[in-house]
Length: 146
Image (tube, rainbow, N blue to C red; front, side):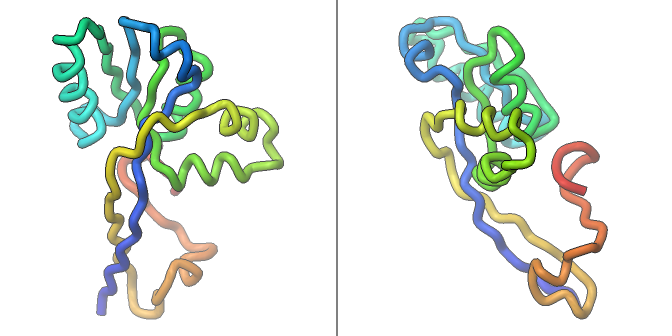
């Protein structure tokens, strides 16, 4: 018997320097994989803001963690799409001061939408606690915790 568990996660559009973003006309947005929803959302947003004189450059990435690092380390990227659970996880990593600082310096611009994650497992896996110590695949290699 397979069980499907739905988990709602908010997707956030985040930026490191909200004050600097407000006055800018050239912005960089790091999204997700080129074939994924987040990257397409970035391209749609690019088309929407262009008539208002905003040049939005859209960059693909491997996922939320890479996006958070890019916000801090890559020039020209002021915005990124990050899943809220990843942001919360990174914010809670007190053992890694660099990541904790990264989370503290990140600001949410606006939530995009909620998404569902379906977890399929063998018999005996009734909830997330049953996955402790087991190998779990999430998306493409490098996209999330494995």
